Length: 458
Ligand SMILES: *Cc1c(COP(=O)(O)O)cnc(C)c1O
Image (cartoon, rainbow, N blue to C red):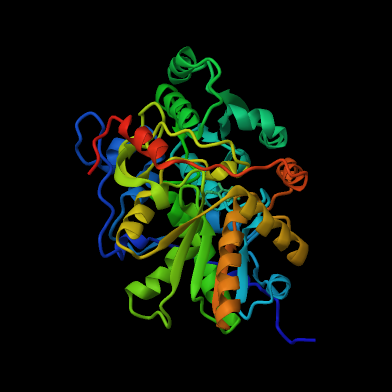
């Protein structure tokens, strides 16, 4: 028997007391979000009608390297943190790779994914500022479930717009949100102007994160005491998620290793940023013992990082959000209906977009079948059924581990297991029955969608 220890936990006092704000360290800061009407850079105050004020300040903070985690938030983190860092010896063996594979297991949170790490502070700041209602959009339902729970923790009412196709296909996530007392509406709906406009043009619209965001923002800006919250893409969300990487940094040290590669799946960038940014900071401050590669794994059917372009674009379909400088497929891009619902978003967060532009990270695209093949292998070798989103990170890890097998290199790979797939068994059923397919997008489709976007490219 090998003596290899498999799991690493941190004692309670080692749970982070601050989040890491990578914006302070970036060689090129993200360009500012712009007011779509005036094209002027936004100030935090411009965002106050939409988000809790502290979150607006965090969003645009490019000077403080570390931001204190409020005690109340840290107390709630303690319910499930630290999350384990696990050496994936089963997967290593199944692959016959000399690589050392570690994963950070965010699936142990009460909601089964990393999303709660940001839902808790977002609900906390809303409560502290006297807000009574929060609203948001959700695709697959992980964010909506996390927000519904966090709202409950702080005594707030939650209204969630869920992408219609997910509302119909993933009834259990809706039940989870409703169990926590949230009001759930399929989007596009007739309850907002944005929804009505979309349905008038296309009565069979299946919904997208873009339509749901438009509806939630409209509700927040037209309802007193109501704020909007977002579970990905924005910089303050990635900031909160850095608890993942800050813990992993200490846990990797306990294991006596440092990653050659840090890998995460990519929807809007929050779990990727969460695990990657704390390690990137070693590169910025000159303390990195290795040239670590940072790899984002996105679905081939929604390839904004690998095939999109960098330009100012809206974050939502109706064009209610500020213009964000990001890699995008065009704000009205409609991704194929893959099971990894959390990765079906047209753009990437502004921090990650700038890092990719500057060559500080890489991106790979993964087809649906490859993702489920890797996820099933992981389930069989590690005993955890990964979320369809997380399967993309696993597939990218498998690719790298097999490369190590060819070269005989003992590389250290760290990936983020962003969530479990126990509520996504329909997806696995379809995979096992041979009913899933790959989706390919032609260059022409991507180009014509970008061309139809009204915002000129850079
Ligand atoms: C939402 C979600 C993602 C994608 O969002 P990011 O902001 O890119 O992290 C990935 N995995 C799971 C399990 C999710 O719920």
